[in-house]
Image (cartoon, rainbow, N blue to C red; front, side):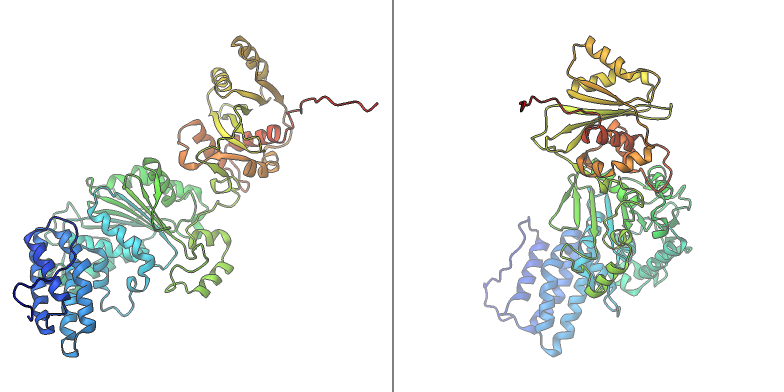
Length: 585
């Protein structure tokens, strides 16, 4: 070295408690950055750097890797670029070895190292669009708080590929890790399984995780296409379990991750509510219970075909556990309690620019938009699922609010669609007007309870919300209007005007006739603040699942909305008040 005795070289270090190993690491990095150290001497210090990193790793695995990635790799890259021709290959070798070291506990470095000699690289060419996903996978491996990742990208961007590499990386972290991988077809899950096996049998994997050098490219004790076990692994049955959504997972367990990858079979299943419900029900009753301990994480990867698919329903469930919040990345949301990350990346951004030129050049992306059905384009390419065909009252078609405006009237108005049969719901649709033509859904009664148990509930709602106008559709054998008026008089309530309405048009026509009013003049509660298994929750489920294209088992929700829109908003049952006028003769 050409440094003078006692001369110091400084490098900015993170604000953290330093140890002997970390201090030595930063001292070596400072030497490598110095312009006062000869190139040949720096080569010797590179060798010392790798030796120190191994000891630093034994002291603190994650911190040693994080610091090596942040401080050492950039320096070694610069040295490789600026070195003389005779030393360039040597510096590059140290650069690659440091990358290999970081790959042990950094997923991004792992992907880069596995792809190092591949002619076609995925991450290197799509890093900008895939980086949030890569970072989330890295974090979920070590962060106990983070339990769920839900990822949605346009096709061919690399979402399944990264999930496969993550699975392989997990076995490098510990051969005792186990993973369940699920999809809609054998072809997919078995393909994922074969790819993982190929990665952990490769020389590159053994370079990153030296334990696998002992296996000499044959790491499997039990080897089947779907289920296999790594030699000496302490797992009940298998390290890897590949299953279709219809396959049995009874008795299987995953300690590292359960990965759900493309659970819907494309456009042909997008409109099948029964398939989506079946997948979601199996998630709640079977698949969730396949985890082996609290450290097992759940990763959902795919395309958001519809608001009813597994990805969207899990997002809704997690949002109710802890509200999802925006992050610095417009395509990433994270829950308040840090338990969930949601990533949705469209093909075209808000500026109508492609988000992934490598897969979708601008011209191709625009052609896809022009030639694709709007429903499919929104779901498949934009990750913005819209209502299924005939679902003009789906959540996405309604106006909603989270916080009501301050200028709402002090009173409410309501309509009651009464029960016709025992299986029907009584729908008391209660709104608060804003004085400008809009009506905000405020409360509701939506229940199958017998009528004689509902009278008091209706009275309480009238009093609670100061309901001044109540329209009742008279489809029952007695006058509900008279009964309610008598009970209100006993309570000293005279402010509520009750109007009976006799409906003659068919329900479907009445709902269709009032569709515009329901969509534009009624402001519903936002989905995020509507709790299931409540009257409003059941009402909104009934409304948003109504279809004009197929028979509906129940239509009480939209029918009550149409009654309110017709008789109160449009004023068919509410006569204008008489006004004094001056006679002209």
